[in-house]
Length: 315
Image (cartoon, rainbow, N blue to C red; front, side):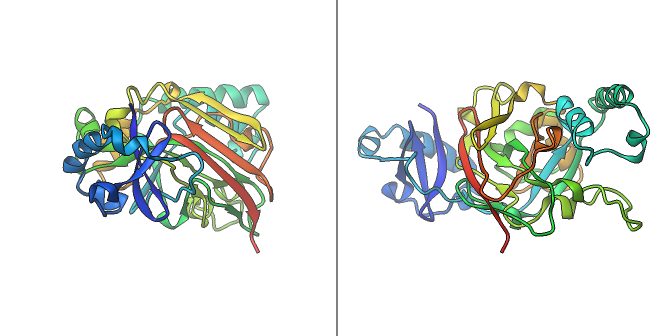
């Protein structure tokens, strides 16, 4: 009897067995974000409400609901290059992730170098960057393809939702600070990450990651207690019915615990902050295929629900 939080019609709801009941049924009027800010008290109450058979006997169908973004996160952190096959695929794919060194190598040399680099990186601290919360949209909202982006790409990922103030925690303590998990799609302007002009001094994560609507988020916030093993989930994304991503979180190189340990050694994580834990293989750049006006992305993660976003050209 798995339960989760969502937002429908602007109100927080409790989802169980594909049906939902507004939390107002039990006299709770706070938003999902406000609930996360009081997570220690809220989580056991959710479990009690989920056992209310009478309420769920008359509940509405979640699959047919117009589901909103759960809430707008305060801070969004992304862990890059966290799946070996993903990074190798990007370097070997359309070339948008290649450096000048890569261009001088043969295909065999490029692959061997990329695989060796990922093996070395697995033992290092994670590589994390910031994505603006203004890029977040709901699991059924349109994704707007900007006029100045030629290679918009998808990256379906496991999102980790923080449930209490987190600063300088160890990996062993990290999961105690996690409220739950969600589906996130780290949409990327692939050709803008590595600039080719003379002003480039490194990767441009602002231009590459933070356009409006470039973070479909939701539909559910599934409490950590309801996810048996976050390293045994299937991440699956299709575009117009063709499956591109179909991989397991078991391939994650830097664990969620280590990501939280690293991030909290630098910043203060707050309730409702989201960590996008990295994308597995199957992005458009690996195939030379990019999002176009009218494309429909459908992404799901085991037990966390499904997103369905239509791409529309800007203006």
